[in-house]
Image (cartoon, rainbow, N blue to C red):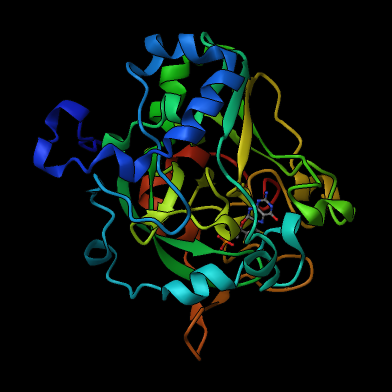
Length: 323
Ligand code: MTE
């Protein structure tokens, strides 16, 4: 499938919002001093980019893609439930806990460690690889394994672009992701409901699929803390738990990486976790879902409705075994 991505040079200057919208300059300078790999980014992303600002601030420069509300033809879930009905166990296991307990979390400065089978390993400031001119808005269905769903206008950059810039090598068959592991900043980590840090992973062809998005915002605004600020994954054909929040590390590797929910209960949660109405969770059916805001349930679609885009990734695989 061919998608036209807008390059920075394609964006007229009238579309470029003042850098102050993006950049908390003091934080940027602090983080540049802390993180040594700053010099390396010149070869990766050109000049330092101003990264998105504080949670809730408006994001400029957002290009619409083919994944718009019109193309999806489904109503957006309101901003309220999107930001108050969350799963983020680092801030508590109740649905409203993340919004309540992540209020004081500071997602800046932020760095991402990149290692393993990659040409440009290092520790990067968020600003080093996030070109605001590449920001896209994509309206995706989001289906939680708990059988509720939402439709959310995410803002982010294609994961494939980032993987290409880091230069994943031929040995990179998988990419593993990790969330921040710091119980002082994420108080839910004082409880061992999961083994910390939260871990997730994708096969490299899944990561390179044009649908996979590294998210920095939603509803045209900087990502709220409870939704995984400042950087999270969005893989819309998989159950929500694959979409790891507050990412601090990406490791490119040959072996399938361990993942948090699979480690916690391998019988219930597999590595693939593709949305599949035909494969029940051992404790409940996945055939239907309740869209948040709706009264009646609706049938769940294979690959969450993205079969045309991703079905070929799993050709020949037994999806009952590879759940
Ligand atoms: N990432 C981390 N680090 N910790 C979590 O507890 N929960 C996952 C996923 N990413 C989770 C996480 C689950 S179960 C879901 S359904 C989605 O985040 C919820 O995303 P949302 O709160 O933005 O809707």
